[in-house]
Image (cartoon, rainbow, N blue to C red; front, side, top):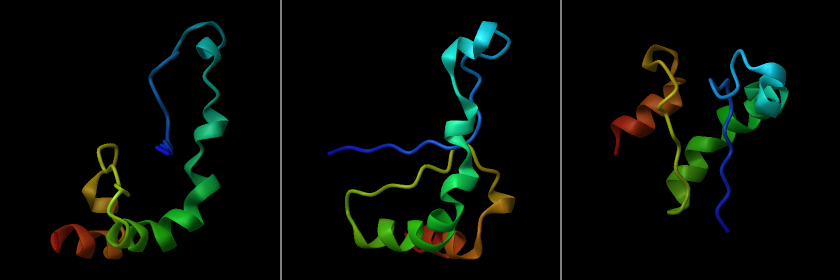
Length: 73
């Protein structure tokens, strides 16, 4: 079953009445911070169907374990 977790802000609904219903509090990355930092790289390494999208990140803020994992692939 496909599952997508998206964290961070979005431009969808920006400056529109009520933000077009988009609730930013539900995409707060702090809600899964511990899980991300500690488990994302090992899970993506071990499970063939798990991917990590880095498109919204500045590489200077990558955790060291993520740098090692991406350089090793």
